[in-house]
Image (cartoon, rainbow, N blue to C red; front, side, top):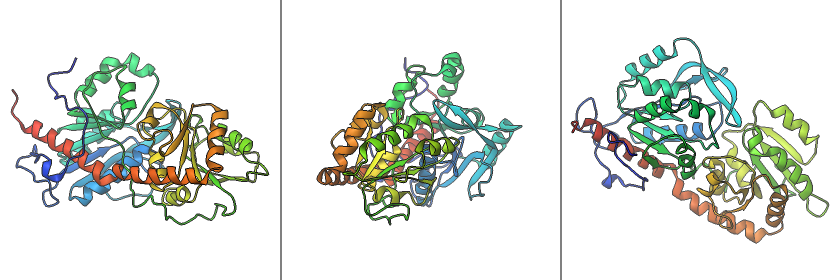
Length: 408
């Protein structure tokens, strides 16, 4: 049942500055939505760069866009060994790699984490604390407990089941109830969460930097010019399907259909996938890439994404913004972003034969590749970060209006 202490906010639609509410700061005074009257925002995430992933991208680009609008944004996260200090990135504890939800994840370890979180939040005097993956240990849960201002949470993950949520349902529901608004990046994310929890979800998708990711990005040296290039870009974990893609690539490639498979990414299983490649001269590993990713997308003939589980598909958007056609798994999270035959060919997950058929179809049909790529580029514009940021800031405006209103 919906709870009486929180409004039913439904699905967010894009809002213009003229249509947005003017938020009221809990510290007093009505705030105009303009750079001259800024909010103090804390973004709390269990991990951040140099770790690569959709949450890190989301936090980075939203922070950049919010700052461009005059807001003060701090990122509160754990410290990854070897990471260079960054302005407005506040480290609490040490990040440790773990295996969770079928993937490599990270968790924060250290002593006195709760006290340190309380001190950082108090010192920041924030108007809004925005936690990402709110029910994940450790820092998001601590921020929910210790914040003395409204807390907004964004959920990013799709999962089939969770033993932790089953055993700790009441504990996690109480933390969820503390959120002023619960945001999900996709419908598939809410499908997973509604198996365990009750909330009034507000859906705001991930965004894309459509200027950074563009079709004219320069070609990286590792990419051949004389043959079509199939790109894999993602973390090296089993659910991303790299092993199946390499096996499929060997079936697709031949004397009459030469090609190169370029693999961008890294992770603890990197040496394992190098061994699976068996020194194939047409499989090129380039390691993790951050700033140079547009060049790999833009100069590939196909972006292949045989992932078996995802909540949204941010790499699909990156490929679309670079006008590169996609062959991907037909899974719930990807259906929120692409449609079969529009900007992607979608194949049953785990089906090596169907993946091979999709790759062959695109490799052999340049007209189809061009059509899917052009459509993808056009659709990606609707996910541009300025538009997504306005939706999140509109949530803050609603929350601060409600937080300042007297109790009924």
